[in-house]
Image (cartoon, rainbow, N blue to C red; front, top):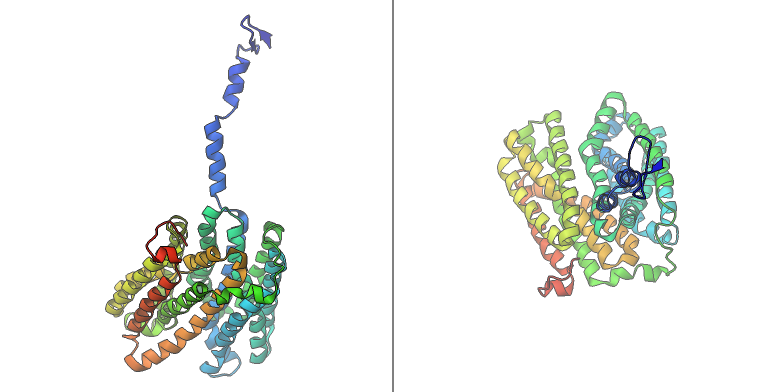
Length: 430
């Protein structure tokens, strides 16, 4: 490299060092755009949490498909074997608020790992169960892990990203649940039918191991601040009328959502003619469109706030119920209707969680655990209301009961909005 008389140095091949270094240095705008793109991406920890929710959701929803296998293996009638779903749901409803309160002082990472290990132990115990009683015991342990993991997963996902990306992070985690409905549960049911229900449980346990390892590696120790308040302070949100309104919205809205899901076989029997493969395709369509609806809701929440997204989703839900009522006898039209229904059905969870977190961020784990408990109560309530509706008005008209509940949920949701927004202000985004 030699001077060229202008004060610059050139390499032997004549290249100007100044221009070469400028060429090697990326423009400031390029660096800023690249950094912005990196900041826009969700961290790996969010997707590990979504994997955990997928595994747990599959273990929960696959139980309904395995009931006939439980009944045959343990020489039970169908109704007795079906109590596994009831036991699981009730345990989750109780475990979510209680254990989240008990573990509120723990680092979030320890809570998630403990919950994952509890589910893992429960799945292994279920796979090894020699009697139906032991199977129920195993599912109780698994449900304890489920009730603790899911609300903490959503809160942790929101903490891993910036405030503006909180909706997308929660939506990514909830998508794990949606994919469990669309693919995990149908696949687990098919594997159980082909190779036995114990193989399904062993596979769930194996994937749970990967989830626990991922959480242990990718979730930072710093996520989640220590809660030093007492039990009464941690449960103080229950005295908040807005929180109660939001929880009531969850109960009524998801009772409406789960009536057609719980009785999907009866409602669409005229279209499927009892064909299990056709019914499975309806469930898969529901799950796929549900994933789309959930992800879209996450982005819309970040832009417009949770209240508006919930309102639109509930109105969409009512419209989809009307479509189902008029198309449930023709299979091709039923596929379209259930896809339309899936978008709305899975577009409610993320904005509801976002509203609760935004209203009381300091108590978000406890409030979300209560919301999760109410969600499990809604699943149980949908079974009771749907059964009564089928007995009273028939499977072809029970969908209108779900529509009426969705209308009631809209009214309850209005009470869950901030006072300024109810008064007409557009400055508040819950």
